[in-house]
Length: 113
Length: 116
Image (cartoon, rainbow over all chains, first blue to last red; front, side):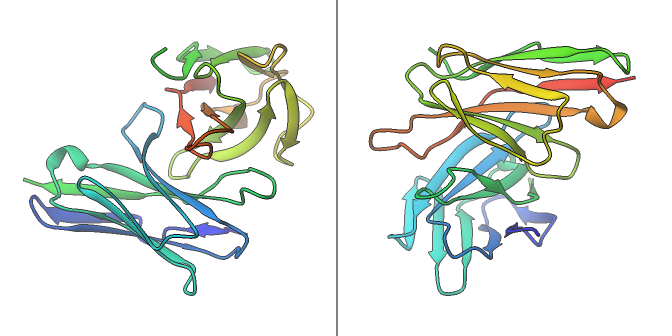
């Protein structure tokens, strides 16, 4: 049972435009969410996170939105740059429970110059 | 301290051999995690430690897999009698466990295992 889903395996965006990556989860106990970027042959790099007590967190070009009622989060990258081309993973955590992070399957973002 | 480190970065072994990987977390991080990642998938949880205590193991972790964190610092993951299905990227991550950003998790570069 995939508790964290990224239904878009790939996304292409023009440089300078907005990239929107989506993530859905099924377990309402999750209370902390993270986004990671991964380049080939490297470990994932932490980007941004959000606690379930918030609905938005912003860090430079990256903003994460959380819609708890829909069990949905999204990562917005504005403006998109060619260096943003990578695979993006969302992850969810039940911080009062098992402290086990559950990852989605990733979305490959390609930013076209 | 520049981050989580893992050694070796690459390991090629023959089926049936034992392998051991090492992970050095960010100093003062209480939690240490091991994941396995295969092509087209996200990191898959294997096990995690709070200091030296191993608190949870995935059902995916067969008896051939064992992990230790003897002094609450570095950790080792051993795979005995390797099988071709063990070929994957093995990732280590650490998390502070305390403080303002206690849930942030940081990954090492991974160890790529190839079983021939």
